[in-house]
Length: 260
Image (tube, rainbow, N blue to C red; front, side, top):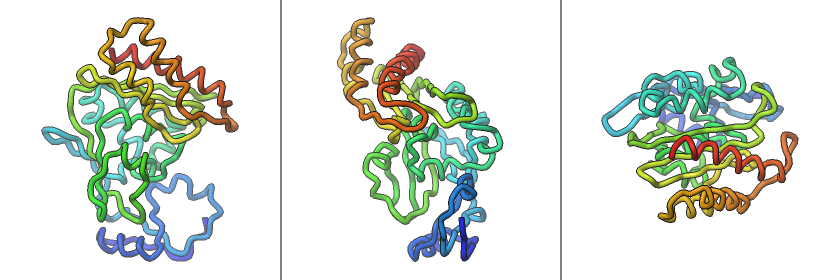
């Protein structure tokens, strides 16, 4: 990346003004070296105190500058969600990258291959932006209406949710071919499939069957898995559309069995 001006603002208001005039936010900078883009002004948020994981009675708040490694190893997060984050985030490439990449950058990048978005989407997550205010993660992904803003915190509701995450890769150091997460909150199931290679999305037809009130017999579960074909899949260098469709059924069912 060819950077003309590198600015480290001291307040979030200063950072916001820079973004409004075309400044480009840099968070962990994990992909800076892979880009040839010419950027006039880069806004580094390192001095804004956005690296934290705080627990409250009904929620956990994560600062967007918190690294993926800090999320992966957090006793607060893993204690409340039964090791879910260690399992989901700990699969992302290598420790070196997880020590660099941030949770905020992973969310705001809206990457189709994102383990972070897929795993968080199974939980009740709200994003708080400086200007826009609060928006659910589901709405942020489905309707990208937040532009030229600064993410201040990620809020995860504490509840009795059970969640499971799976991702299939050629190797541990590769991007995933397909990802999925399944959660169960008091008998209501949420199914997310990502890296299709599109961004993670709810498998609504599958969820409708699982949440229909029917007893989850093997027949009903198989019907729900077949409904995963109604999601949009595509081809890229890691896998074909057809392969993703078949594998999705296997790993979603595996996750479902863990949370039933």
